Image (cartoon, rainbow, N blue to C red):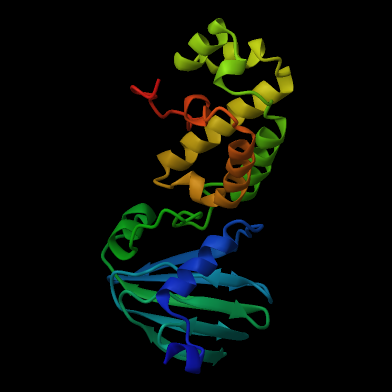
Length: 249
């Protein structure tokens, strides 16, 4: 029935979100107001801005205060114009497009005034939430993807049996800088890899799975290595940063 009516399922909206996070992100002007157990969030949306909203734990009100906004959800599509008010039900995930320059306002019931506490009270956790409660960018996916491409492009050919005994020991000990130097990586390439590891840790510290942002890039690199791995050694010479090797060797 959803296919006939062209109504997106929650899964389709999540799939859209996964692709959108790989695109340039915009930081929107956000204003916050509090009064008598209510929280009001005002978001300025330039024309053409496409947003995948967060899933809320409580019902709330959405007001199109200026311009025109198209909203899609599992419940269908609404074309909102200035002055239109709708109820956003708990658990709903919505996609909105600013047809013109627009302003959207949400109204929530809460006694909290701390934005981080409000986020925890009202919003379902998500490992693809790139912005904090003040709409500041928490993790730059574009920068992470560009750096991932550089790291992949700089990768030198060779698997376990192509390395010296010393290189194998450095690799097992996760002494990656010493290993990289011994393999002939440049100072710039080593710095890129170091920054890449730092970005992975930053994402993880924000409760995100950074690898989902680069799955298309890493899959391509993995398939290339599998084709080159004539001796079936890839499991010995490939592992994620910060991941213990255990008894793999």
